[in-house]
Length: 277
Ligand SMILES: Cc1cc2nc3c(=O)[nH]c(=O)nc-3n(C[C@H](O)[C@H](O)[C@H](O)COP(=O)(O)OP(=O)(O)OC[C@H]3O[C@@H](n4cnc5c(N)ncnc54)[C@H](O)[C@@H]3O)c2cc1C
Image 1 (cartoon, protein in one colour):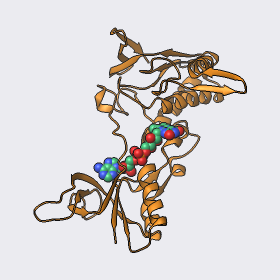
Image 2 (cartoon, rainbow, N blue to C red):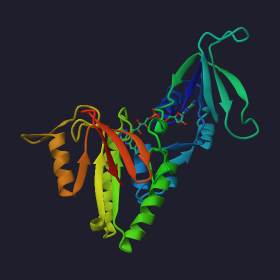
Image 3 (cartoon, rainbow, N blue to C red):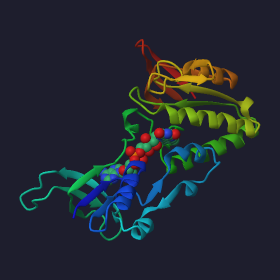
Image 4 (cartoon, protein in one colour):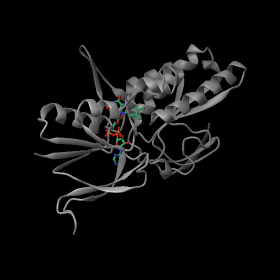
């Protein structure tokens, strides 16, 4: 009999636990440790952030499903790893800390035969001074609570635009080491489309800012897109889309500081510039 502990219940942890449960007989134990009570389908946050989906539509509670599927579940976070055990525990273990209920704050040694670490990327907002969602008129679509908040902000702005307010909207990635440009790219197009739908597109100046070397780089050196016998580079295509939709762009920018209405960034050439929003 083996005990498999899975840390995290995002796409990686949840899929790993589900497959293992399906493939392994019941004598083997599958246990998920994750601080979130819900699974969230993160890519749909680009729709939550423009109010076209509600956050309820992109999440489901983990506990009832895991109970039904005979997957163990602890709503806790991993704190330290002990692959060689310690003086009192011979087996490898993870020290976990409960995050809710009567056990909140309590720590427990969770032993394992096999460990899968699916705790995902760290959302490193603090690497960019002033960029915490909710401060300085900044928003994010990285989690469903962030995306709900982004829609609140966009919805309020659309109402103000309908009353005649003009606005500059800056969307992209923050810190120079940010690696997920795809989500921001999808979101800027969604925002642009939503403003059209509400007939306020002419009230907004929309600008893309990212650390990419070229548009359409997406942190993977771009793509080649084939249509029949024609091949197009992704930067040509994205330039075309942005020009068509009147979206301006700033590239090679590592944003290092945000103040209310001003983004400070360093370019690849080492210049220090600002952009208002
Ligand atoms: C808006 C948006 C759109 C995206 N669209 C796409 C797309 O179209 N295609 C694509 O391929 N990618 C997309 N991505 C990226 C993709 O969502 C992520 O790469 C993916 O969610 C990572 O999955 P994960 O399971 O590794 O981590 P996560 O989904 O971050 O899950 C991590 C899990 O670990 C848990 N956890 C955290 N700390 C601990 C701890 N100490 N102990 C235990 N558990 C812990 C968390 O609570 C969570 O349950 C998008 C991202 C965003 C933000």
